[in-house]
Length: 136
Image 1 (cartoon, one colour):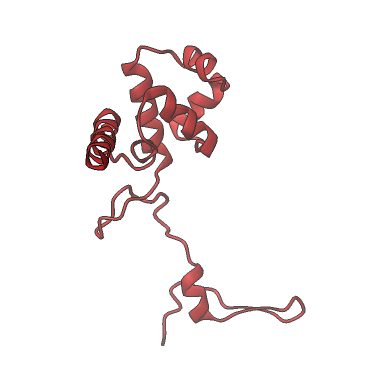
Image 2 (tube, one colour):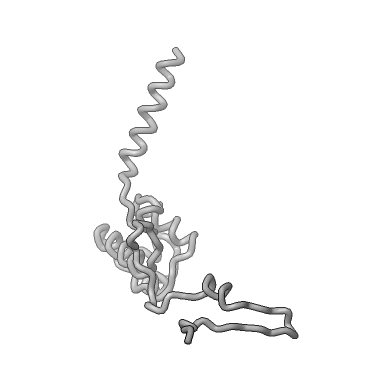
């Protein structure tokens, strides 16, 4: 007897919706709950709990309370609390505000990839200087 592996077969003729069990393989979800930040293939994924913990770490390292941070970047303090606890995910606008305020890249906030912004600025400035010297 073949196992179904819990994959449903749908066929709603009246609505024009048909999904065969083979096509359902692509529409299944993981049952474990959350997606890990790093998988065996070394791909990076967004995890709102880890991202919230990074934001909390940055806030505490700068000596800000949630209320003070909320006032500084004009976000509700309750929203910051929920983001830090991983209850909700930060919006793109929130991520940009956090990255600008703390002076970190979006890569660091989202997936934890640390890049020194000052070192990157220095490399760009050095490249500009070299190009200017080459043109003279």
